[in-house]
Amino acid sequence: MSNGDKERAAAAQLVIDDEPDEWDKRIFSTGCADENTKLTDCYYEKKDWRACKMEMEIFRQCWQRHGNDKRTGTKDV
Image 1 (cartoon, one colour):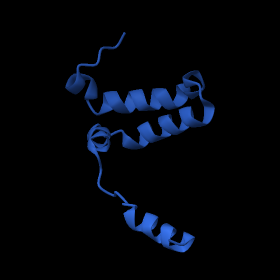
Image 2 (cartoon, one colour):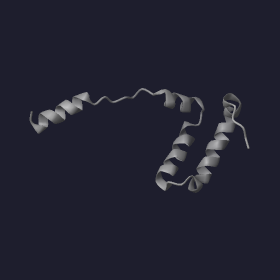
Image 3 (cartoon, one colour):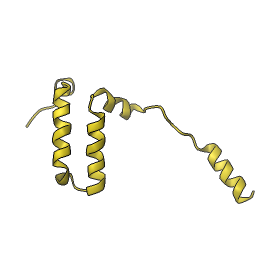
Image 4 (cartoon, helix red, strand yellow):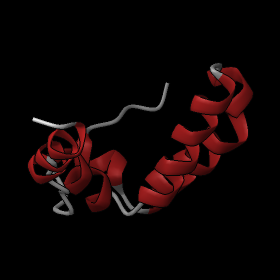
């Protein structure tokens, strides 16, 4: 099998999954998917949650605004 054939076979096996998985569904149901993405991206870039305090606060406010504290039993400490 040539390299071109191997590449085509590998590409044929590649499945593009556009369907949301269970994690995506849970995040979308909170109403804070965009805020979650920004928080996650911040951590990915900076590798330190302490550097993402603003993003965390925005996510926390969104979480509370959408009533997720009551829905998930979150406790504010």
